[in-house]
Image 1: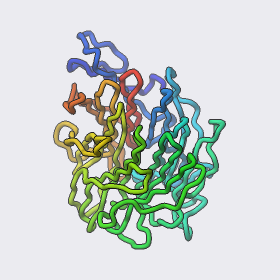
Image 2: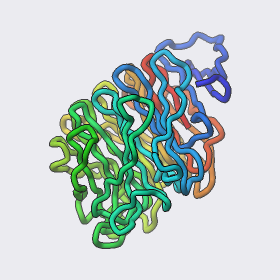
Image 3: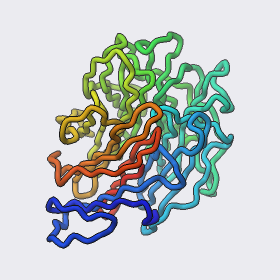
Image 4: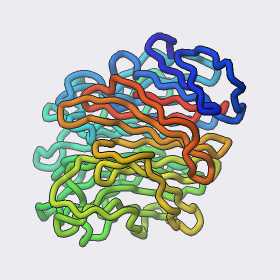
Length: 392
């Protein structure tokens, strides 16, 4: 990451240091530095993950939002810049990103393997069944310099709109997921589907419906899948029961996607699609979830043993237009929640964030930065040194 275009905030004793400047007041050493930086090369919709060796992996979208490309970069531990980008999709222009909810998603496997899924554009090949828009997948090859040819994972659950993700564990399990209408149209009939690979992404079985049928799925809302260090699979998505119960819903499986339990995270009665996204992350055994409800963003903690949800923590103050939250925790137990403000259809906005202590109490002032691009969203990166980076 180059110093140009970076906004650095040091949250300490209520003071702020901008662009690497120093704070003359005594600062609390336990408070982290928070750095907000644009995605390289004009990219949008970053998805990030730190592997066990401290390498930061990132996939992002670039180009025409209706038919662009997914790019992959990495930043090795101790480095300041990202590597040269590698295009993920083997067919140029085969990635869809319109609406913020449809961009590429990434997961890291047992030996640092990189897996990416994306929603195919109208020109994408191969297609799904009967020419349907596909769910495409690729993984970084053994050379680490190119991705394998893209392949479609959709075998029968067609009717994409928004919402897809990928997750992987340390045992060679890879889970690709999306929500779709299946055989019956209508949001109230949509379900979340999972295609499971047991051989590190070499092959996938036919997708299976894993969400309760009565809950539906909000058609143009995003979703997020994640596997924690215990091998538990989490899926966070927005329901659409009877077309009005747009509850944020958590699916959890501790038996490699054979069975799932469903938990209501937050209720929202709305006879419309809010085009929302959400986030899942883990740090030192803490699993965090972030989402939007009625223009406000929240996070909570999921107990990895009981799967019980903590009380929800909201971004400070009243809000009507907060969207696209991202959350992460550092080794000190501090949590950073980031989100966009003022974004809408074909409209960019600004970035905001708030630091919380381990108990969920806000620490320091709310941070802001301009320049969230159209269809943009943030990704919080907890650095190895306890600081945070926000890519947007």
